[in-house]
Image (cartoon, helix red, strand yellow):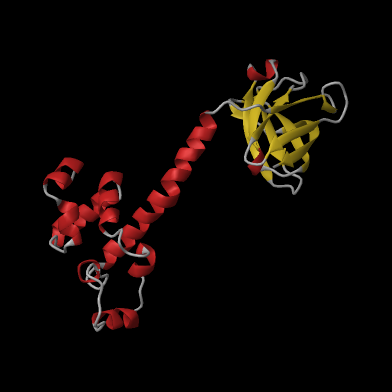
Length: 231
């Protein structure tokens, strides 16, 4: 089922009215999970509910009480969850979550990722920072910082492996670096949320190749820096 068929057949309206049955209903329910426009149409059909999520999980006793209510609101007889299929309840719950939480959140993340940002840059070489002094990186909550590293030119390694760990010891990032990439400083963008404030550690290992297969990584160097996260 495509969107044009759903619109031409007024399937959203017929679905809310309970006129879709069998295979037609199943196909439209499947369509709702992939079509935000139809999902919004269905959501609009129940917009008069005080809370779609609460109405759809109403207890059987409350449903029975609604049936004998001597003063039903005009819209309740049409939108009552008594006749709504369980599959529709689950579907609409997903629609409400996507429309109210998931989609806006994704849009915000994309906008933030595409927006220019001033980032703190940490350059590690030798024992700690370039120049031998301990270095401190400052990043905002939800922001990022740049980690630049010089791979020590020691040994005949075919590739390298870098592992960044947080103060708690959890692995923040692990990545492979080719021999060609290691000729210059490599730069990694690190989201502040992926690590923790305090002393972060970067371990650099070298990997040789024997008979076309990589050998066990050999420790080359360890770099540390302090991370400060601000609001």
